[in-house]
Length: 202
Image (cartoon, rainbow, N blue to C red; front, side, top):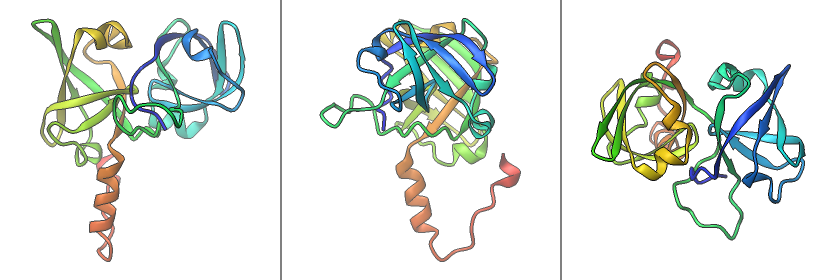
């Protein structure tokens, strides 16, 4: 489990068959093989590490659901270690299970903040509500506005300076994880009803 508070911006050292090598520093302080680290919000298992970074496997399902297949050597990535039992929830409950991707429609300055609008499929937008939480590339963000096809967030200067968002442009894709509570509520309220078919929404 994660909180969506990005610990550091790492970088892709190498793209390998079935995996990635990620350059990092802060998340290596207590790392062990088998630990979980969220890379752009996707929970991945550390398979090896040294003083400069760590390796992870990336399976086909992860590639289908995320933007990790778009990464090239040198690409920056958001990193967060799994939350310790004694830690604080600075963001919200994040599993590291990516629901899908969205495209950045626009990025506009508003004072010191950046307003970012994302276009996302209805299969994700059904769980998005104004002032609710969403994890975007692993960063816990508050939704400012939304409709059936898009949502917006406002990035404070700290978020801009400590995540990969400062490297993003309109048209780039991002990973999304919606609030798991919304999924459970939907499942419970749909008990006994015909299942919702989202195949043509994806």
